[in-house]
Length: 418
Image 1 (cartoon, rainbow, N blue to C red):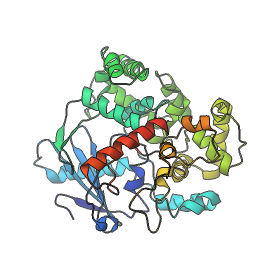
Image 2 (image 1 turned 60 degrees about the vertical axis):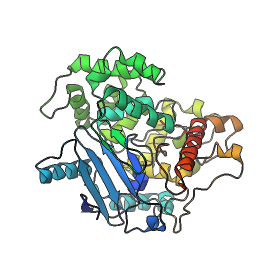
Image 3 (image 1 turned 180 degrees about the horizontal axis):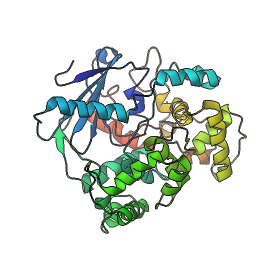
Image 4 (image 1 turned 120 degrees about the vertical axis):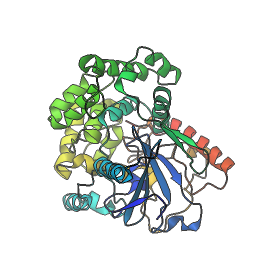
């Protein structure tokens, strides 16, 4: 085991970091390769390190076939390290919802749905994160009519401009500063909109500032006993409200429509049955679950159809329908086409034709798209963040930079998120 890491026994069937943290639920995880050697595929050795910045620490994770390895890094080394390790472990259990037996859910979904039964062995360990509702809300306001590469860039810029750096850690290439997520009071300041527009947030800049100001004006920015602001506590309290009541409260906020509200309900407010529906989910429903096709999926995704898809898929998958939907969605992404294969290729497959390669990075359409719709197609909440450093084809720093730029261009043209 690497120095400073502690081990939590946990099989990949319960949690696969390589799937859950690469599929676009959260936009602030930094993922670094640990080795470029052939041992990278050895399941007994971690291949990557995953880092996430909280208010007071950076949590670092690694994974083997049977254990989750974790440690915390603080700006100043604490005296009570055992207590701090216990706090980190509590956060990990909550964030990944490890009290929920994912293997049991996979069995239930397989019994209920032959479609799920066919793909479960390749896509194990995909579970819903339980994110901070405030961060989750702002992140998915940014996701509206946007793509994963830009959402990730925007969230990183947001943190870098409105939070002080907590600490810096050396990844394999260059040192990286880590920033906590900014508070509601910080984003409620009148100057925030103009700054965000200068950073490329577009109309979402006003949504973010107005939503933050609305929450702060209604509940002040006073700190609770836990050290978070009152608006953050109010959002967390929606976990105890009914799905309908929580959704109605979210829909009052600027820039929050049904789809964004449902993302927040599912990913941070414990509404496990909620399925955020976009045109891609609509296509999955057409391909596998009896919905009729349409020549204009975007225009026909009416409120009634949205409800019909939700009701149908909840009938198929049951109480944890939102969780099951995330597995189906991930399985349909092009970036996961080799995921779970017995002998995965060390180099991602690429199109023989440079032009078509710009459009096929993460998405496998379930129905043949037209030339127009191919350029406009949307993915849902789960997609591959463009800022992940891929070790499989990293032969040199120059090549990595070149590939990363090409990947961002493809993402700008192709997939987009909720």
